[in-house]
Image (cartoon, rainbow, N blue to C red; front, side, top):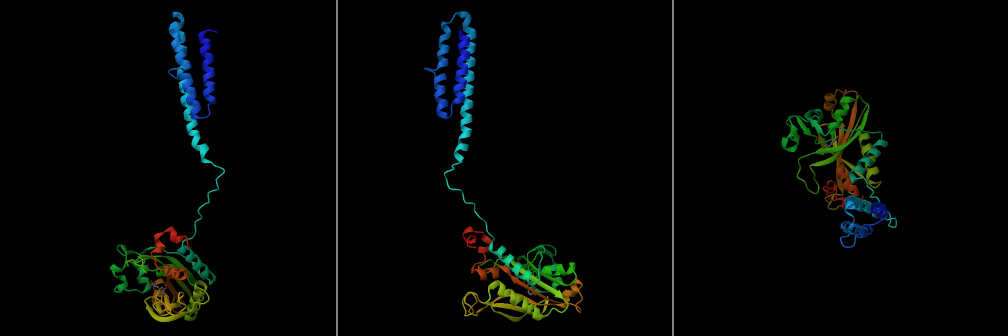
Length: 338
Ligand code: DAH
């Protein structure tokens, strides 16, 4: 066998061995065996070159150089391939227990909106929505709130520009719905409202309300009491009692506030209900004829009932939450409890 044939045979053997190496240690052992400075097989061939007949030195030396380059390249490639394969192989340990997926759940306010929508749905109310950025007509004028009314003070509202503000109440949706539909109308509108209040345990400058409106021929104050008392028992539980107290709102006449018996003390009196046994949860009344006029409804033919309440407050009462800020901080230790 000539020297060149020998080199060719060695090349095949070396490359086959490298391909068969199945870990980094195996590759390293082959590197030492073939390329090692002291006892490597390829350096040994190089050392033999000077003893060859002069005519053979050139071609043989070239062949050995090629062999060295080929083996070096193949060792590198094998090492790289084993390294990229390794984390993959380690990623699946079939003996470990499965990873439990983290189940999400509804935020207590989302849950409250759904429960309330469900209750009012059974009472024949459709759920509608309105914009949070409003104009003065829908937030004030259409609701019979004149320019001089204290509620329109720029310090009590988030004005975004001339005559444009973040709505301070969901009553805006009453006006929008009546502008766009003819009676009968029976809707509830949950949503966010904004007021520049100082934030504390009971106040937030963004909170939620749910508005209700029912307009038809012959709707009476008895319907108002019936709808709201039924709602209170469905939402707070059969033991909840209600009482109505005269009040004033520009967009209803007559107007009232509804109280529910305190859920925490059962009506006996506690700090939450300020020892009265009652908690005010909403404003309500019969739609003022001026509001009907603003939206083009015939105030002689139709009557309507309206109500609006703080959704956050109802959720807090029902679930025993003592600080409204917890609802908006999104701390999972709090949210996980619902
Ligand atoms: N919009 C009132 C508020 O934010 C609540 C309210 C009172 C809504 C009486 C009504 C209503 O629809 O009839 O304080």
